[in-house]
Length: 138
Image (tube, rainbow, N blue to C red):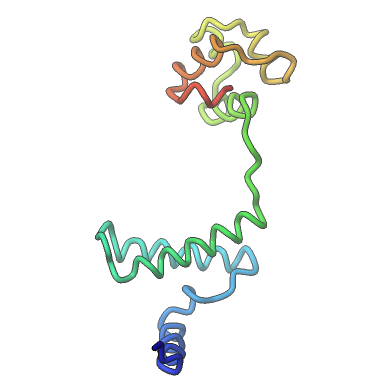
């Protein structure tokens, strides 16, 4: 049977050793501290399977993810959002993408403004150019 007195004593000891692993994540500053601690924890445990610190890292990661999901939800991305993202990320113009893919610049503009739906041919050409899965644009 679990001895909760021993568990409580061990928990208090762990909290004193690594407060960032157990602190509440209630703000962006808390998130920064917890994330920095998780990175350090990941460096310490490395890729060792079954490392004794892995459960602590996993628990902290889930708490960080829960905070981010509540405070910074990521919207579902669709074709126009992904196209805009890749254009911005790679600092490309619509014309550069048009020249490289064979899709007319006016069509790319319409796709971005949601005035036209992506076809399978558009998705294939863009996916090949950006080196991503076709599904990113469908």
